[in-house]
Amino acid sequence: MRVSLIITTYNWKEALAVVLASALRQTVLPMEIVVADDGSRSDTADLVARLGAEAPVPMLHSWQEDKGYRLAKSRNRAIRKACGDYILLIDGDMVLDRRFVADHLAVARRGRFVQGPRALLGAALTTEVLTTGRLRLPFAALGIGNKKNCLRSVWLSRLLSRQSTKLGGIRLCNFAFWREDAIRVNGFNEEFVGWGREDSEFVARLLNSGLKRHNLRFRALGYHLHHPMNDRSRLSLNDGLLHSTVEGRLVRCDRGLDHDDE
Image 1 (cartoon, rainbow, N blue to C red):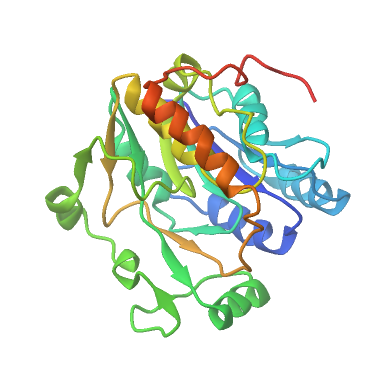
Image 2 (tube, rainbow, N blue to C red):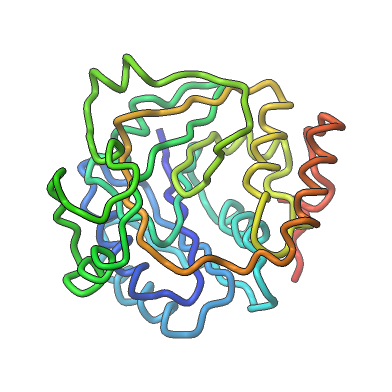
């Protein structure tokens, strides 16, 4: 299976460097890494170029002009650049367990997408990770939210992972889907500007298209670095877009993967 790892980022190269390092330490490497950059300064491009020059797999930098928070558009641009049949989508502040890609491959099935777990690192632990460049995480470490998501167990995963058609609790910081399914729903809805709900709206259309949601537990672990809360001033407008998709049971959006402009 050809797998593309897409990593979203915006002006936090220190976190991105740690995340990329964790991606390159995988027991099973993706066929490529695509950095979906929503308008970062040139130092992010310099980082990707430097690491990409020595990486064992191609590392692509998908950049768009900084015109505010346009994560949906940034993700679409990266999907268009990606060559994989299966896409792993993470945030640029998600440090990966070394078996992250292998675990996702083990549960990939046609007819579904996968929502993976995350553990939340506190501010002090995040500072340590950014300073050292690595995550060494004993299970008893302090300053971790959702600590159960630090435990990897194939047996527990098989026992407790579940399929669902529910929309609640969607977080695309650890997410996997088939490229052809994204094309079917026309990718992310670029009407979403500003933080919030573009992930839920994308998933709503995947569900409306007939796919199932697989809630993966105890595998494909990711550790979310602490950061300040994003500006949520457009959340009510984005809530309205999500509501329209859910109520209308929409499958495709008008401004998506087939809408390639600035």
